[in-house]
Amino acid sequence: MPYSVQFKLFGTYPLPGDVQLSANFQSIPGSNYSATYNAPTAEVARSLGRPLAGGARTVAVPLTQPWTLWEERINQIDIRALKGFRVKRARVEGTVDVFNLFNTASVLNQVQVYGPAFRRPTQILEGRMVKFGAKFEF
Image (cartoon, rainbow, N blue to C red):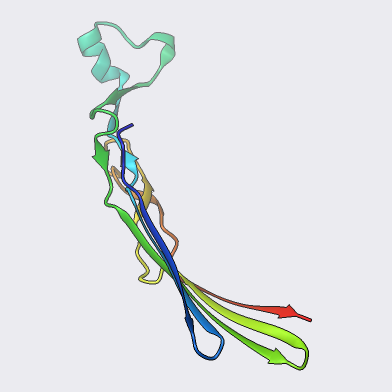
């Protein structure tokens, strides 16, 4: 597998009023894919001069070299806002997290068998998600 560059950055910034903003950015290489053709026994038998051994119906023929085809880079930004305050002797922190802020739909996995569904995504990056949370200390 060739070397690939990953870039990750995290930062937190305190604001007045017991507020904190933080962000997480990551840029990682896209997934590797290849192309394979499942040749039926009828096609193979013409050049081989006999049917496939063991009663196999198809044989996988690689169409590309391994580790040569890549999806686009996956870039993702997550942010968090935190607000702390006191209620009598207790401390309360409320949080709002937003994952995949720009709602990118990068391909993580796809069909690698040559045919009508070739390169159809089977898994993509999860969509934007917002999470609310609270922490109580007493």
